[in-house]
Length: 257
Image (cartoon, rainbow, N blue to C red; front, side, top):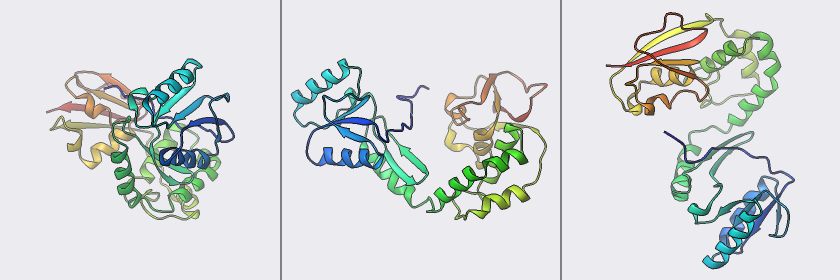
């Protein structure tokens, strides 16, 4: 399964972004750009990004053609087929930003998802992120190996864990976790027998371990919809039987029943 686009976070603070148009749609885009620190400029300025919020179809198409001929990436309001990039619905828990995109299919759906997720995420989520950033050096001192450090974080952030991101936290929680976290074995091998090709039927444990695994060995019959739930950088190896030497970290073997 391929993505319709690659999600990216781009720093635009202090950089020019072209905005064309007037009215409610253009005003909304202007507020979004200014909140990100962008310098809003006109068409003649040099910029890498542009947002076209012109209502007249002919004017919009002409403006898009001129901008794209200059190599400028264009977002065209209400014209997803012409967009080089889209602007997601955003949940702000500074420094955590959660972006929800639909590839231009429905801004209303993205907004509805944002509203539902807002109530799930505590206001202290940003505080947790800041504490993790501030204690990065201490985490590296406690767990010099990057794989072990990532596994410790994954365990701490599971539901009910010491750093469960859906719980309320203060800055000291991360330091307390660094001091009290238990050391565990450096490698682990788990087999999952799947009863359904639907990823929504994964158990909580299966979904959690799939998202944390360093490598996933699997039979060819395991559907890609399930494998897509693994970390993007996790190795995926097709095989008919469990590996003899799984390797360090967390290794999964998945087979369909």
